[in-house]
Image (cartoon, rainbow, N blue to C red):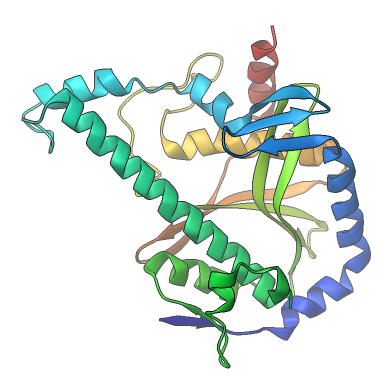
Length: 279
């Protein structure tokens, strides 16, 4: 068990930067006015016009042929699922994917609860997390809950201030939309930090494939796919007059958390790649 305690510095930093924070929130809200989201089918619409989701863009540049991969696994004596039928392998992978997605959703929800707790917004917390609040603080029980609570506890609130969480973005020119996890203000740099929580088993595992052209300089592993994802969010935020000084993954693991800084050098080629999808 780990207990996230209140930190007065979190509120003080927000109060000190209130004008900047309110301006940033207004810019984000104004830019996404007219954007709607259908969660069941994960579809975004901007004034009735469907936008590509950022996740679908990633899938376009990094397609995964589940059936072909299962066929290779079934024939490979070194694969842990060797000996099972292709159908069994596909079913096991789908079960693992669904379980991982459900667990990831829960951890993301708890990460948001930590943010709300630190900023005295408990009324906005989901009921299951409100029940975790004790006199000592917000209780984390599962390993990845502990990891994200420790990350929140590690933030230097003298330097950073909370700006926004779970915010939808749209790029009408390039025709895509998505949702980022967290935006902080770096008070020293006078610019913004975008963070995204990830619960993947392995960010770096790579089977030798690359993304489709013109992104073929990037490996088809989770880390570099997330680089594309976060760059697409960054393009929108910067276009709103909000400079970004860093873009990070907060990798939540059974043993703790790791901050992974993403490269910000591929913006032009990613922007070009997505512009070609409209044609």
